[in-house]
Image 1: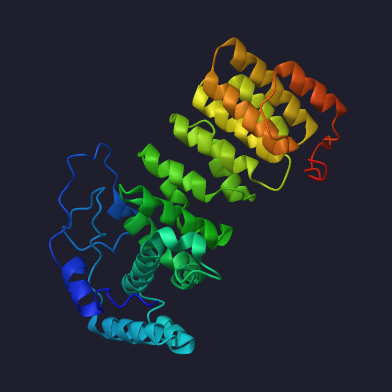
Image 2: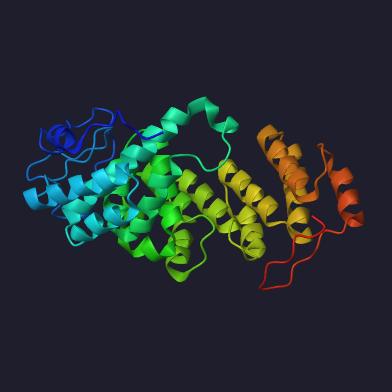
Length: 331
């Protein structure tokens, strides 16, 4: 289903892009110079706050607006060639590209929300994948809109979509947005780290290394989950982190990561953690350890420390070769 109830370009630009800027939110506790991340996009004198309002981007030129209208007409008609042609017309115009990305974001949100509770009944690719995939194909050109219209918001569903889009763009687009990892709002930094989940390249690795020592426990926890999702053995790092980390929430995230990594050495470390959690009467820790061990082994129920140790002695969980992630066969 096409989002026929979306506001057309003329009204959208008048209402969002050229009115007064959003008022500073009284709930905003961390000031971030959002407009400075991409100078030249915000309207002069606009107030840019953490808010559920759209970023006060400049109005496109008349020529660019014409190209955007042609792009939307082609998009609604499913004329992929015409859409791509109109998109190329504004490719070198950051303001116009921002508006093009905003249209695709609005479509993605509209179609996701329309899907609602019927998602489980869908057969085939959901309708929101079309604008979502078009956004990821724009890559770095769409990053400013993704960050400023989604990650800047208070709403969790908007931030989730922003992180999902940045992740789907892949490491190639990371240079366009890695600066967002340094903003003072820890909630934003958590979503940035979430977007890096499973990536294994030098730039993302440097960001994750920094995130592991972040002052915010949520950022540290997300960093370990993202590291554990990599397709390589980070077990030694995670096992050392259990001993070094003091925050119980972060320690549970590390245990979850060890469970996702698999391997006999990691299972043994989780059982050691389980033993400590039982001694400390840490019910959340006991649950996290058991769930991680159950995921690794396929066992359907919790067990005691002696029971898990006995099971691991008789199981065929593979041990890992240093420097490489082992096969998961037998897990």
